[in-house]
Amino acid sequence: MAMTDKHLLPSSLFIGNIPQYSSEKDEPYSHIQRPSILYNYKNGHSSSEHAGAQFNILYDEGEDNGEQTSGCLFELTPPTTIPIQRVSSEDDFNFYGKRKRAKFIGPYLFGDVIGQGSYAKVKECLDRRSLCRRAVKIMQRRRLRKTPHGEKMAATEIRLLKKLNHPNVIKLYDFIRNDEKQKLYLFIDLCVVSLQEMLDSDEHERQTKAFPIWQAHRYFVQLIDGIEYLHSKFIIHNDIKPGNLLITIEHQLKITDFGTAEQLDMFSVDDTINRSQGTPAFQCPEIANGEDTYSGFSIDIWSCGVTLYNLVTGTLPFEADNIYLLFQTIGKGVYTIPDDTEPHLTSLLHGLLHIDKRQRFTVEQIKQHEWFRRRPPRTFDFLPFPQLALNRFQSCTMQDYLIELHRTSTLSNDNNHIEEETIKIPNNPVAFFNSSYDNQPMNRQPNGRTALNCSCSRTLSGDNIPSIKSRSRHPPKICVLS
Image (tube, rainbow, N blue to C red; front, side):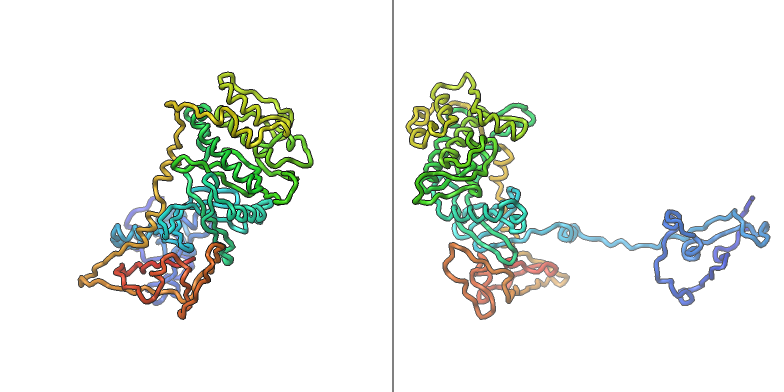
């Protein structure tokens, strides 16, 4: 059917039974936005329902005999003009960028997450009293309940760390409990890396890493010193392995993770224990063979022997595809020492990994051994810290929070007038914390605040708060516990 321009009707004419509204006053639902033609086509709806608001139908007048023909043209109405508003880049950054807010728990300023575990995560923090960087281990009771023996392991770790004070044992500086959020905060030493991270092979090199003899000797001497201190306190660690041995920036070894540790009664006859929850690859033969009771001190000595073997060779003495075959291999006590190992080190490894616990070396015998007493000569070989861990330690994660906390900004309006706002102090504290190391009670002030709720006590005191110049669109930040 041929159609020319002279046969087209004006665009204001509308066909069908749907009424044509000439003005907004006549159309009762003109303010409601109707779906588009493409939307109706994709969803299977009839386009005639909303045809009056979206398009006009044009047809041939000469061939129209009272029936609607299929030869129609659609004249789409032009889209509505949408104004575009110019937004400054600074406002766009403040709108989309997430601003870091300083968070204080007691006297500690929290940083970013530096580690993650099954039931806890580790963050970096800063002690405002000494300006020393610490690590805080955050435990959630919700996750502890889901972990087998999680609450018991957390209670054991806190109880033992309160009693320990040794250069080669991780130190607990403070412990805070938040009953409202059901969280536990353990403030401990900040270390760079663990021995396991230093031993992990690089994917690009495709080779196993091992410590040089002089470096492994230095770490092993510190490990034995820490084990001797723990045994003097009747504490059995039960899980000595490179993953639980942290190294500080001064290359000082720290024994950590006392969740599986067990403390003997000081009046007990011997070091006999009935359970062990350590890593399978570092378990002793008596555990692998399924004995009922074990010698607690011998378990730690065996784990130290497996750790030393791993440090000097880069591999484990006992390996298998599954835990059943692994325990069979450990129960036989058969392992191989590389031929290039020096005789004194071979003798020490045989004494540490003896299958009979009665003939296994004690701490006194280890300290009297020739390899332990003789310091190997230092060579040019050195296994450094992983670059990723070193960069993580060298970059202080609290820097952005300190800048956000102490910065003062000014904003000039059209009249070159600087607006000043007064900081509003909350009347009620958000959370109440109890610390086992703080014997002083939190003094309630008349306005309802507590003096020890935040590290910035001067900021929270209402008498000496000066007005801070800040942007009108960003209220000033104050240090409150959340």
